[in-house]
Length: 408
Image (cartoon, rainbow, N blue to C red; front, side):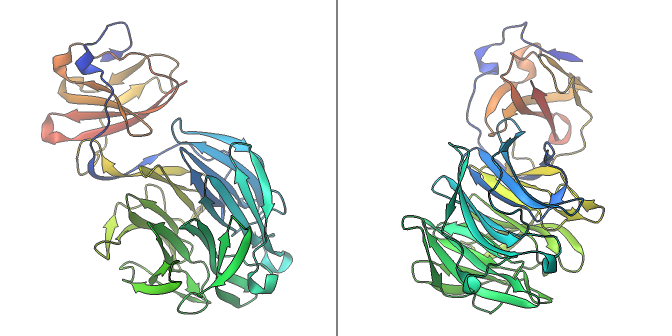
């Protein structure tokens, strides 16, 4: 066992901070649970290094309006100002010009007991303040839920949704923040659709999946806001689905999980250049629907909450599309890091004589420490408070093992 402390001064070559060169990895890592409790049908958006999650339905089937900020660098959650207006589920959210936008939804877990909502709110993270904006005008100003929201080319959009008992929408509305106004755009090309999903890459939005009343879909369409036109894309090769989660990383779109009559946990990547789908690593947690997802700085995605076979979830997972060592996978580790969390030093336990290379990375993917046997005794300087990944490469078969630890 080697001690990781700051008592021994390392050579500069063994502790230089450098940017990471990345290669394919395709890895899920469990992060801190959502502190707002188990829930589904929430919304999320991200701005800079922070993700924002709120609303939805909890385990008591109470509809919520609280909001939480996720600090991606430290893997911590902080409660922020709650959403004004009524509590809601199945709302829409998007980020635009460093503001978050949340609106529409249903005010009760039983639709017949609730109100269909049309109000919309913008959130300023610098002020921790919500402001009312022009309400969603679709469905003849009567609101919508189960729609999808996205932003592209400096504008926000709401598409599709459910507008009543066995009543659905194909409408697309565009929000222009400079004039605080909505205008109608070309409707979803195949007609009514709800529980649909969307993501944006460059100057186009990609919208699809969901259901037309009771028939689940796997189709995808590209929306061009400049020409106000829709173009069909290749169908998802996997299951039809609604209630799936989507995010974008490195100019590729991803769809994860959802519901097709049963729960799903697969992850698919859409490459707009190749105009093709690729299967990726299955979700790191259990199957679920109506989860939230967002990406941070084009480096990784965060997916969590939702409802699984055992009920609503509070677990959160981070998806890395790339790896720091170019390895194809991460095996079950024979190593451990103790104590974890720690206020000072940590130790590595296991067959340390087999370690070929050890690296410590912060949650932004930056390498903050590098060690090989040529560096001498394995010691680390003190780190700032926060969460880190310890990555170990061993001599045998070039395996890579990943551990998360916390300094507080």
